[in-house]
Image (cartoon, rainbow, N blue to C red; front, side, top):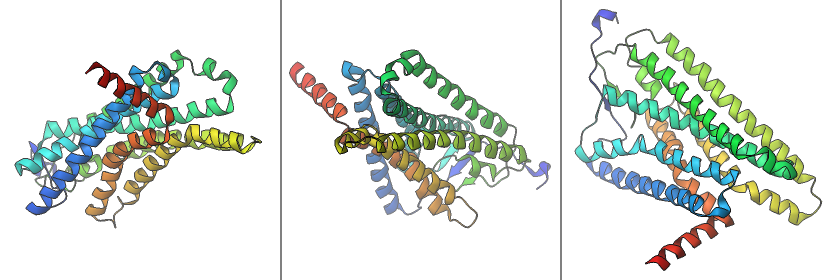
Length: 312
């Protein structure tokens, strides 16, 4: 299409999952339930870590940051989808779409960095236990989180600024339940070559480097654990990183599902289902994984509950 045929876009349409009113009601209840569980579960993790001095360690400092990021990550997409289902409207303003994409990218990349940092923390704890407190000092922990935020914000800003220069055609329907960058680019009438180059470069860099760090950390962890002579010692070592390893597998497993389902032969339905796993289900399950597999978290939550009951 020639540039002269492009129109100034004021809003997009989020076509979502289903046009059937009965299905819409079921989807509203399902996503509202998952959103509430996600927010409450991750808030409990944050409260437990902040209120219990026994949990003021690097591992739980990173965990509380992950819980905060998961709350924000889910909040960028689900509330707008619930509002659209409730009002029977599919629209999102152009500015609202840009803002949603920006924060979605910020918190999505931040999740990746935090999981990587937590893998490094477990590597130091198991492979260098005598130097753990020296290496993972408060200054380094704060610096790792700060750098993660800077990189996440910068990545999202680059993509958002490049998107603002595009003009869009008359077809503004997005085959998704949120403003997904690749979907929005397909609606552009302008040349999107630079956008796609940056997507492949930055996604590869911000995906490959953290994932390589995780693989390196856990390869060294497994190697160290296998050298422990006692079975009981091996079990204790594995239990210290079992929760985090579960989150890593869940996060990257669902992320891989999104990319595998996003090829040309995949249906929009499969793409959306995979995205739900990545953006909604994973943040919801993280608190369960940590609370069920982590004795310290369970004890902290029990003490928090007992303190609240005692005050009442």
